Amino acid sequence: MSWDVERYEARHSYIWNLGAGLIELLDPKPGERIVDLGCGSGQLTGQIAQSGATVIGVDSAPAMIAQARINFPQLKFLLADAANFTIDEPVDAVFSNAALHWMKPPEPVAAAIHRALKPGGRLVAEFGGRGNIRAILDALSAVFDGAENYWYFPSIAEYAKLLEDSGLSVTFAALFERPTPLEGEDAMEDWMEMFCGTFLNGVSAPRRAELRRNVAERLRPRLYRDGKWIADYRRLRIVAIKEPVEP
View 1 (spheres, helix red, strand yellow):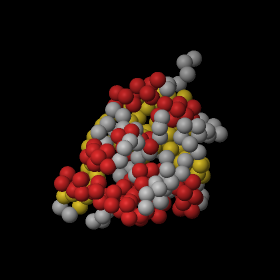
View 2 (cartoon, helix red, strand yellow):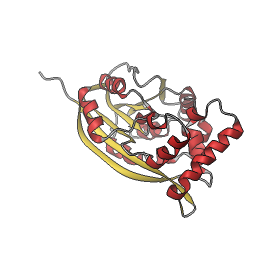
View 3 (cartoon, rainbow, N blue to C red):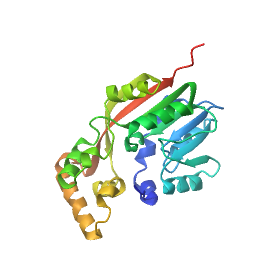
View 4 (cartoon, rainbow, N blue to C red):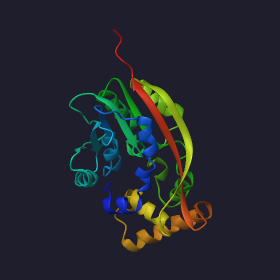
């Protein structure tokens, strides 16, 4: 999928603004080495670096990495797929916000995270969990084939097992509702243009607009309240540790 970075930064700042609490959970320390996996245009990478940690941003989207390098030229960003990224030496932590639900299949991603961590290193992540964007998915599925399988939204049990099968021990997991206000009167159509590009590829501009309006009107009774669109986000937050090697 290609990304419209200008649209992303102009109208979807809630993605990194809501990541501040996850950085608190990460609790980065000066001198630590940390990977920001699915770093986008680098806003949270920059915040983590303010702690004194050495941070490497990793993303598979060329446009995002190019913008991240412009935004934070002092930091290191790596263009790589999450399933096979490699780091010169193991890191203290892998951090990921609002990204793992895009990374399919998830098994090789978990294996790559395990390889990147030093023994005792931690994964701190938040992404779409079971039930995320349920209403949006219902409306998309009524208009587009394949919407149900477009993202990866696991339950706590499902994702904990996947991590443990990859050699990571889960120490914290929470699945919670996060109704998220979107920006603008046409915010739901804009959300679709930003995040559903694959459904709209090859469709003429007038037809794209018609399809977006169709989905938005299906959602209006459920997600438009008090003059605002509210995305029905449900997030999975998780911490896992790579166990030290037994002596």
